[in-house]
View 1 (cartoon, rainbow, N blue to C red):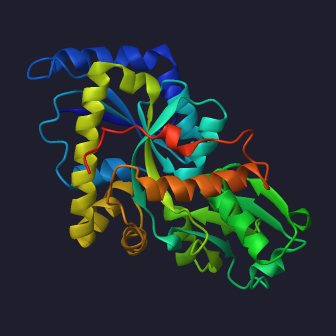
View 2: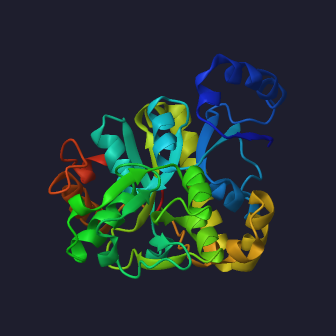
Length: 326
């Protein structure tokens, strides 16, 4: 099965040129394809899902076409899901809730419990800021947007430290932009996650609060309602989720090999890739009652008292059963 090159921006899929470029590939791959399955556009962040499936050999024998669409954060990825530009979107739990509250027609198909160390508030080396309490009167940049897991971490950490939100100037930047600004000393404190966090720490950034005890701490795979309503696409998505689950299991059992491949694909320093992989707990499972309860609590706090969500979201109504085997 041929896999088309990754796209770095959702605009690639919103224009007609992208669809035209697929036609010769689809025709060439017509033989051996499952006529009951449909091609998929799979969203990704920092090539993480693509790398894991490739490392685990899960592209072998895929009977439908795959195009990868890579994004720098959950916010633009979920925008693309809402626009119909991608069929699936791996994203943090709270960005999915924010998207749903804004009207995005999505369902949660699979979840994994993330390490609380995979998100943090960091400050530059040599910063006088030592604790969350020291953020009073300071500016903090959140990556990537309102309603992100990083935003929730900051709000809950300030509440925990009894620092009034009004005393902190909060700004929002996509991780790539914030990374450059942080590296040049333009950001006093940065709330960040994943690969960007690991890279900042490797450059000397100091963690003043990670996600321990601030939950809910899940990663999700969201799917568009339109995609799973289409029987052919639903069939492909079920197959893909099974492959993603096997790939996640492989990456846990082969962390060093996965870290090496991940470093090679992303151009990341191998030592940083090992940190990222060590903080992952990617084992996929269907959304269960524990997930629903934890995310409902966080969603309710995002609604009130924080006022981030425009309306209350019923998390249980977003769960799509039967797409991933337990």
